[in-house]
Image (cartoon, rainbow, N blue to C red):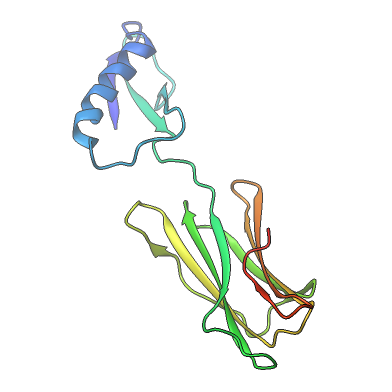
Amino acid sequence: MGIVEEFGNERAESQICREILGIFGSQLAGKLPEAKAIPSVSVFPLEPPSPGEATTLVCLVENIFPPTIPSVSVFPLEPPSPGEATTLVCLVENIFPPALEVSWAVAGAAVARGVTLSPFIPAPDLTFVRFSRISVRPAPGDVHACRVASRRHNATAVAYWGRHRFGGLSGVLG
């Protein structure tokens, strides 16, 4: 959206931004999630201005969507039986934007074979959900890890699942 102003007669950036936010605020009320960051507004000319000619100003509004930290959990699709193969599910929630990598490690070694990955699924809160599955045969002492990496946020989250030597099952260990 642009605003046409005469070169040399620009209003202060803050005044322009207040007017734009006033217009958009009433139109977007209840349609966008509450921002968890401080929205920022920048106003700049679309093209270099020329004295005495009208110029189009661009208003860029950023941080209107909440920053998200994906949550990761790992659980068996069905209760595991000793010595039997089971499917582990990695559930990744609270994803925005829909861009991240999901990988698995079993007993510390990266595993790609037999891994399935769902598409990004929209959630009602304007974030996304994603699933990954892997079939494993849990052995005492094995630790299975689902690693989620977001390049945009330069962050990694890991959820663990394993069978302890004492025979008890664990969920997310850390």
